[in-house]
Image (cartoon, rainbow, N blue to C red; front, top):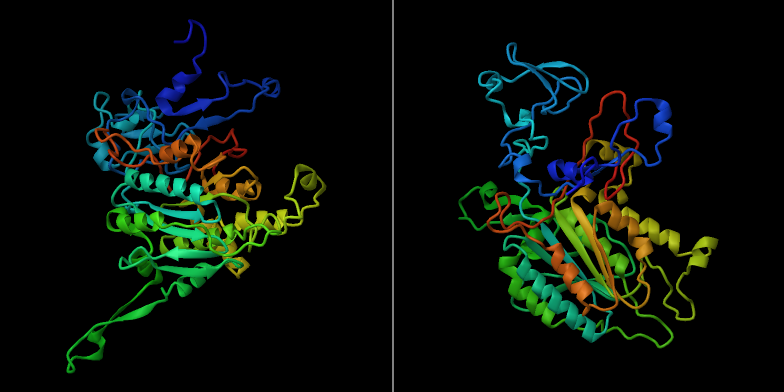
Length: 465
């Protein structure tokens, strides 16, 4: 409890999920120049608000917007109950209520948007289709020691039990090369091996995995027309969903069997060289696979690595042990030749559609008209090693996609195990909204409306503008 006469910073956050960096707005330009802290608002999208300050359920319709500035109807709007008009507090435009609002609205009967204590409302947009369950693609480094792989496999098996049964999962292991495991083949362990010294575009990944578009042949009688014997062609994304990305309920046994048989990369390593670890190639295959399969659907690429990338694109250190890994002095002097190319490679993995688009004009057009896949595909990095793993180079990839980063000494540490469990936190089964669902969201856009006296300077956090 805050003392009498003091400002409780958490009171506003409890009612709306927003914490402001100011208490009183300056009334003049001179007062604004004297403010030390910049003006801003800290917003928590998934914060659970006190039930008394939010409608009990999400409103099952689209919000009412101002015809001029597109602001949403809210409790701060002035309402004329006689003429059934409401005035926008941002642009002062007078708007008519829709017919179903105008027929029933009175001073005693207000819609949820106009109730004073409901400053925050959640809507179920009718124009947005159901995207389906999320997808989790595990990318596992097999260059670690056998003990580390055993601990990691045990943690991943426990994580499978934390996922909803309808969630999609996939597995990619990498060392010198990259293996994409086919979970839909249950007769034995089957994987497609890709060379780890190059990067792969989405179309190339589908071609190498045998998921190119092809017509489905159907058996028919000899007298039937040829058009009835040939079904519509199956897209590469549908083929991937049937073979490599399957629901937990269908592939948990196959995936656990693969994790039980996980062994160290068998490629020999000379004594004077480091292990060939194709981390960049594995991430390239993972992001391209998701972009090919579900470009507008929520997914997470969860990278588990035990050392720096030493082979292929995104390498941060040479394989020769006589060459040390970059230090702060090397970065300050710009003497590290691998740093900049690695940063550029990981940065473009955030959106494979623009990374592999050869037409710059089309690339510029698409980024303005469509939401980028980086908003749907999250990249997490779990690095457990006593040495550097090249996280500085992968930083932009994680931040641009809104992922999490966990650093530890070993996969057997409690820091790693507990952090992995927290990623899969779920709502209680008796919750009013989203019971049993994972506490995560994908493909979010943040739209900020202000009056004409104000201007948005920018945003800080896991966002892109």
